[in-house]
Length: 371
Image 1: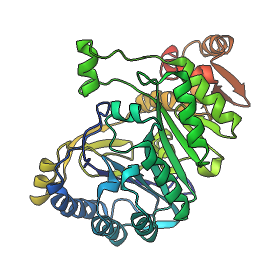
Image 2 (image 1 turned 120 degrees about the vertical axis):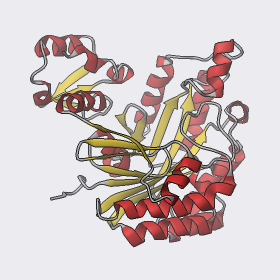
Image 3 (image 1 turned 180 degrees about the horizontal axis):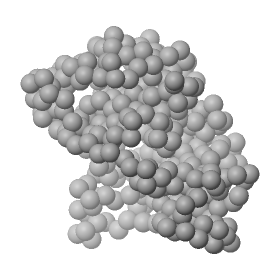
Image 4 (image 1 turned 60 degrees about the vertical axis):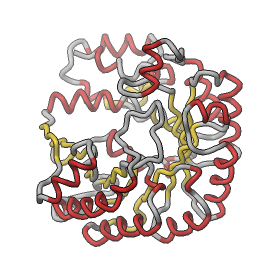
């Protein structure tokens, strides 16, 4: 039986962007002529799963840039979802958006389609930084989009921001945070710029053309301090919320091994301890579905030991931490826990080991201490 907040989540990957950001390693393309074929293929993929999962309590359109879709394209997508799946009342329905796309008429249409949460990719309010990141919006457009979102009646707004960007500096980052705070968003996702293989920034780093600030601890701690001083809870390494009411319901499914279904090229799914992912190619995705095949590239069974280790990795990234009982079976548990406490990386709260801010900085390495 499915219980509250254990319901599955539904993710749709919209693999289209107006241009590729030099730091982005998510799958996307800039060929808008394929959108129509992708939507038809998506409708076919939805049919594959209509009897596998139902009663979702989240729908998340990610990308890519979902806000790039026209009103008619979005309407067709949402109609297909509702015709085949059930979303329970008060479901969290999120769309990722670029500030330059959100004109008032677009926002009105999103509201009418049932979207109640917007994740806005602002990244910075500094035009020089935005140009460096090759973003297609300006700080003025970000300001206007944020004001228009509020005027449209959206009461669950998340802002994405990026720190440790070359040329930004401490004061630049503080200014960006303060400007974002002036809109009083319900949620923040604040990420350090990371340079990943396969991106343009990786090429520039390897050639020595650009020097990146890697391992930026000061900005991480500064972000946490400023947002907590303004009433936000630092509930996951990169995420902050005004209250538990505005924690990302969808993302918490990933962190808690709750089932989720991913649709679209490169999308991942997790059901009954099986994880699978689709081909990272729009053309292959469309071709497979045209032939009547499910566009799954690969599947893997998550064994108990692997699931246990993943739970440690995911748990130490959240304010909820890890149940001490979940650590049973590992060698020298008490010694490791005491070492983490003495290092100021965790605190014991009731029956849970909870990471500190300092612990968040090394969240991915703490599970490796348990054998």
